[in-house]
Image (cartoon, rainbow, N blue to C red; front, top):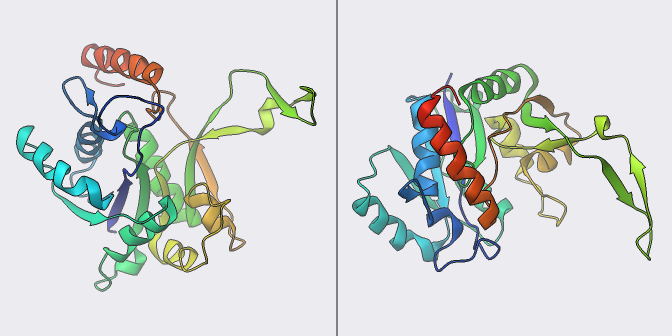
Amino acid sequence: MKRYMIVVAGGKGQRMGGLLPKQFQLLAGRPILMVTLERLYSLDKTLNIVLVLPHDHLGLWDELCLKYDFTVPIVVVEGGNTRFHSVKNGLDAIVDGDGTEDALVGVHDGVRPFVSQKVVDDAYIAAWNNGAAIPVIELNDSLRRIIGGEGASEAVPRDRYRLVQTPQVFRLSLLRRAYEQRFVENFTDDASVVEAMGEQVATVEGNRENIKLTTPFDMMIANAIFECSTLHPEI
């Protein structure tokens, strides 16, 4: 069974600050995107990785690969105007034939460098059994719903909600059909695109370290996780 992973890295990183987009800023001395790709490859060296980058970042990526001696085997694809269109371009780069349509494909954020082996394996197994699977984690904080102006809100039961992570994994044929739909604004992730066809999406337990690096505070946490992981490789 072939396993593919589309890694999307098109963010501008405005909340992160700095001169470089967030995916190219350094984590433990290497660009975050490289750390993510190297992590995925270390978990499964048979994984077929497709990296989707904006056109304006392709030259910079080539320079960084030379500078940091990046050797993970990947296919690089130019992204689109939205995440939806970038994932669609990544899917188009997966060549049909030789049973490819029976393959599984994950979609992962380029700025989530700490996904665990168990989450990746669980997501692919659940996608094979159910067609679609996403990792989620429970909320620690209380949750409220805004119900009007003047700051009005009401408490909602947090045990009915989960935070969604990546990789989100699907049967390739299912995700291809989903991305034939017309783009709408409420397609916030791949699961929402699949659900728009009336399909169900299974969940697996995510790992709390699998954070999306978006702000300087996230980088502080990431550096702490990275330092801890050198002492505890199981993280």
